[in-house]
Image 1: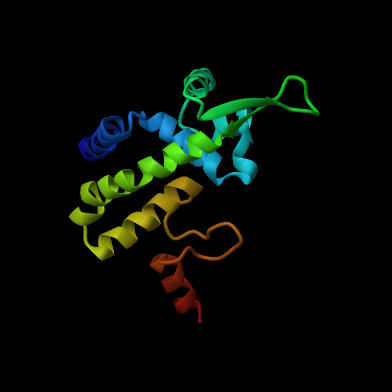
Image 2: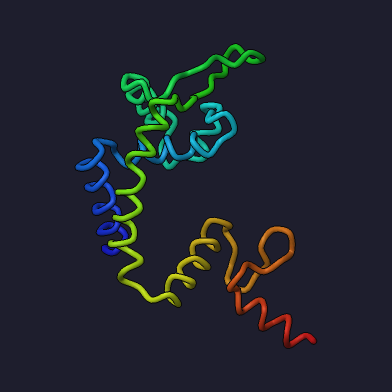
Length: 157
């Protein structure tokens, strides 16, 4: 737990210091930047985010104040809204990204071996997919680097 807190603290501090962007806001902006038309329904953004719906709504309001995100009403559902990353928000994200990437490299990847990085990727994929070690990923194929699944397949042959 201490390792995760140390990593998160280093990343948060760098984003705040260099870009005046809290990590939660950065996460929202990244998710929007990766979406078609740089927009997502607020409900989709809440599902993809680590924030609660109320916290997300507050964060989007703060991003709107900065001119980085705008809310757009859904044409087919009067209750629905989209959050859209503006050009200014995309520019702020692009300006913050190199420092963020460098901090992640310094705080994580410079401290582990390439083998550990591969293991970390496999572990994170398992956690994200909610699967037990050695089980198949969606689509019936083992994840890259999933040697337990690959070993089991080899033994069956």
